[in-house]
Length: 179
Image (cartoon, rainbow, N blue to C red; front, side):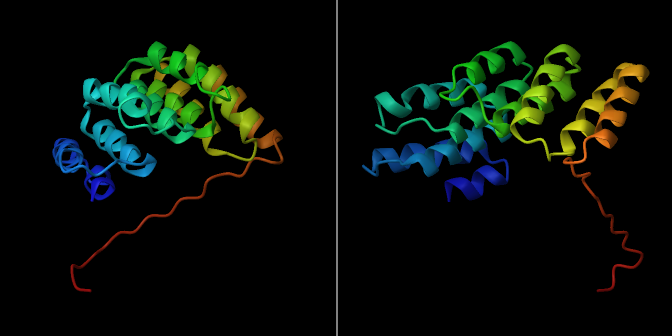
């Protein structure tokens, strides 16, 4: 239930059910705590997510995993707390995974932070060189900032990287509401 509410952006509901769960004596596990963090992320509940993240090991006895750190980094970056997200990733046991760096890159896109975006993109490219999506995000950041020369360089490097796969997309246009 927690994950379901979280996916649908019902952060407050996730926290309500989580509190009820704990009050009833149900011990949360890593998945339920991830659901709470995702719910807080989708609901913009930064303060609440920080509290749950801090209490994971001390109060609930659940070890933080990369997915928990990644969720927090993504949430912080989306909230504009880019430097805090960078510090969180650097504090991860393995220095950050593709999800943490990718979340940071997404936050940089939202907030136009080109310098950190370049570092995050470089990390994603090192960890997962076949991920062509990182090139598109970086190109988008450059385009929004009017950095056309950098945009051209990114597009050329995507073409030069034989391992990277371009992300294909599709669209659907419904002409009549009859199905």
